Length: 249
Ligand SMILES: O=C[C@H](O)COP(=O)(O)O
View (cartoon, rainbow, N blue to C red):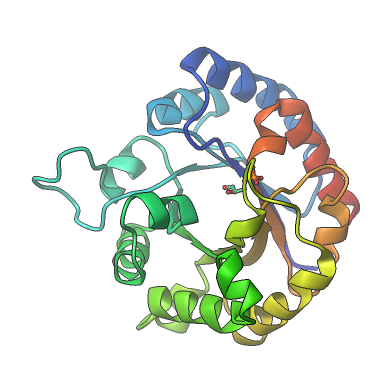
């Protein structure tokens, strides 16, 4: 059985006090992380080093950042580079989340550059893809996400591809304004992604309104090898329960 990845991005939430409490709580419960489950947490940049220090250097919990620039250094005010993220303790770089595509001009081209930068520095790119409600209604979900993925992963060798994690997060299913996807709705896009990427990438995750009631069912969809979670995992209890659910899947 392949590893099940179960992780959370905190998006733009949590003070350092809150980040500390969550990370310390997780550290205390590490013995409950089931075998075969790969936990990861992606805090705001401000909490990266704090969470790294609390979890420790050799933690089984992987640590990520929510974005990083494709250049290693330079005059890019407001940006953080992959080497800087690595220096702060990150092992994963989240790339292309729909909120970044919508609000911050992320494109297929910038996701490609960022995937390459993460790989160049030995970090795991967590590439997010997902279609809008309009694309879904027009019947174009699978073609759209395959194009996003192919564009971002263009030119990679099989060895490099094997280090990439893909998270399929339909925009219509994400966040407060989203609605949970049904397993029926997800079967076709995952079949399309699976046909291309199962066995070639490190993980094929689902994200978007994952909760304690739908997590097991989502993990049962063919080709799904993990969950990428927002709100449900922001409370540590929710995250621990998701890890336990994955352990039973
Ligand atoms: O990064 C996580 C996803 O955007 C999902 O967020 P959500 O679980 O709150 O819908």
